[in-house]
Amino acid sequence: MHSILPWLTLTLLMVIVMLSMVLQRTRRDCVRHKQAEAWQELAALAFETAEAMFVTDRRGIIQRVNPAFTRLTGYTAAEAIGQNPSLLQSGRHDAAFYAALWRDLFVEGRWAGEIWNRRKNGEIYPEWASITAVRDDTGEIIHFVASFFDLSKQKAAEEALHRLAHYDPLTQLPNRRLFFEHLNTAQAAARRGAYHGAVLFVDLDDFRRISDARGHETGDRLIQEVAVRLTRFLRSEDIVAHLGGDRFAVLLIKLADSEESAIRFARGVAEKIRLALSMPIQQQDNTYVLGASIGITLFSGQEKTADEPLKQAETALHQAQSAGRNAVRFFEAAMQTEVETRMALEGEMRRAIERNELRLYLQPQVDREGYIIGAEVLLRWQHPERGLVPPDHFIPLAEETGLIIAMGEWVLLEICRLLARLTAAGQPLRLAVNVSPRQFRQPHFAIRVRAALAATRADPAWLTLEVTEGLAIEDLKGTIAILSELKALGLHLSIDDFGTGYSSLAYLSRMPIDELKIDKSFLRGVPDDSRSAALVEAILAVARHLRLSVVAEGVETIEQAAFLKACECGYSQGYLYGRPEPVETFLQSTLPAKRLPIGSS
Image (cartoon, rainbow, N blue to C red):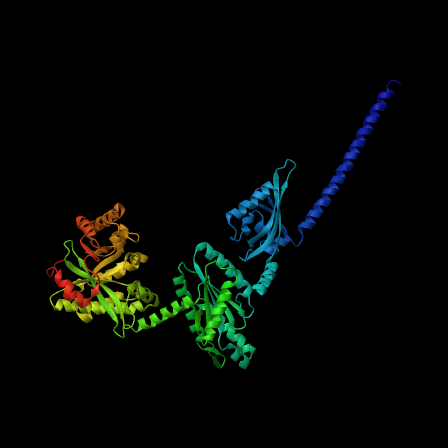
């Protein structure tokens, strides 16, 4: 009996210990259970906050959303659960953005930032989002939890503050501060790109008088109308700013590489502004005419300070006002002189046709034996005071101003008259003339040519119209249509400056042309320069392949002529055979000396 007691005691102690351990474990489990329930309650409470939330599985499939998610996005829980969060994508972010987001989630376990999403109704809005990866005991990601809130109101407030700081409340145009920011950026870009921009300083001439007489409300309405007119015809990249009162600034970005071209462009814009602001403004029952003085300066990014161009333009503005107002002035005297000379030349050029100052000159075209078979017609301007104005001085200006159309029509009519005269005298001669791009693209150009031929009874078979290669390929479909109309009239058609553009067999084979003119730049190195010689030979091969005749321009030496003859080039033109001469001089002296029998070609 006594021997059994120790074992019973030990067994009882073990049972008590085990019961104690079970009780302790049960107690701990109960505590854990209660803690888990508490954490679940806290999680559920957090999930019901005003901040939108959703939970996804490791594949990114939405498992749960809270009510704030529905209020913010418009999607109900039933619509969102089972979907990918890409349901909300706005399209504003590229693939690289989302790749970086997922990289942070998998590497760092979290991502936070601003993102643009789309509501169910299609509205795009900004939000601040925080996404966290949830891992299990082994470290594997099992869920992603995202919370986000709408930034629309904050963005709107920021935009309002930005507009107050950078935009004029009356005109909604950039103010002086924002103008300088744009100017600084434009100067840096001009320096990198090696081009010129311009600043125009605009002051309304009669505004103060009208505002004092009619009141500030009328003055404000006039300023608003001026702002509309200033922005109406400028390029999208140009900037118009209201500097206060009746003063505006215009920033013209990336005008041209050369200073001369930039001057012409800036002057043209300034004149458009001046004319636009000189037009009457109707306000209620009253009509007002303001007028404007404008100062201009160019910039290239080499200025000492960011505000230097605006100061220079203001100085030029004072010069315009001193000149009697309603005027345009450049900051540099040399620029102003050039502009005034150009304006004077333009005005005189407009009267050149009326005053019978235009002249036709002829330069001979010869065959391989050197006999004249035709001539190119060139335009010259015999100015009563300036003398003979070189074509490179007035043709570009005529192109730019549109006067080339009237000049081209005059030339066409005079050529047709000359052709009719030569035919009537029994001495027909093939005459070739280059057609201006503006004239060629003019509506119903072929009809105008037909009218000139009909009015003069000229034979179209003796007339060659030349179009440059660049013009021909600019709008190939349109070019082919116009050339086909001209070809139907019986004209001879030529591609001028061939070799300086694409020189493609594809486009040549589609156009109804008869002739190619080799640009004179290819003849300069012939025959010594093997590359130049090879290019000329290649062009001649192309022409033979397409059964086109060829005229080589710029032949000046006997060696060049011999090379072309050996290559079987059909026709040539250049100083070796004769310089351009007035029509009568050509007909009376040059032509009889080297004339083929009538009908030869």
